[in-house]
Image (cartoon, rainbow, N blue to C red):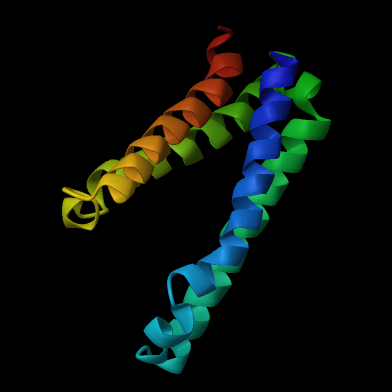
Length: 133
């Protein structure tokens, strides 16, 4: 189980790094130009802090996996909080993103399903220590 926690930790750091590609891939310069200065800055600041959270979750998991698996109240609370974060991300994938973004498009549907599976996996891995599975 330690290696599983460490593995998803590395995965989360990878997700943070992947965010570095988003501005070019999604044309953020052109897309955000239409926003007010305040909204544009909020968008970038929030994206930055999502990346920080992903790196922190990743580092915590890589370097403190054994502690997350200890089973005491504190370690279960940390694991539960991370699991809740990923569960909420799963809900966003299922209920926020409009199906028009992926339906009938092979690549986008594949990515959509892959992310659903990823969010389920991350939710489950961090839920395991909480419920002592």
